[in-house]
Image (cartoon, rainbow, N blue to C red):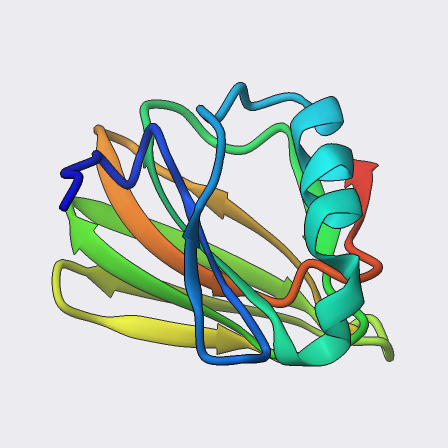
Amino acid sequence: MAVKQLEQYPVHLGADASVIAQPAFTGDMAWYEAYGQRHGGDGIAGRLVSCHTFREPWDSWEMHPSGDEMVFCVSGEITLHQESPSGEIRTVVLHAGDYAVNPPGVWHTADVAEPATALFITIGDGTTHRPR
């Protein structure tokens, strides 16, 4: 049995109930593209589970058109902003132990004042980014 750090090695939850450790996370779009190539066959049944520590606000918005994303605050405080397809902006503050769901088609971004860590369970299929 191998022990790995989730922040460095995210996992894929496969459609066949498998848990597959991913290559080391690089943080760039090429990593996500390669992830999609490795697991695109799982369609909307597959999920990416990742954990990230943020030290500054996000510099972009993202949206997952194919399914919900759960954001679980592990430590610190995260201000999550959601923009609905109608343009309505909703803001929630997550503290350690809190979670929120980004529904499909809802753009979202986040702010942090101090370091904060969050766990994400995401359907990656079709994820889109735009500048903040």
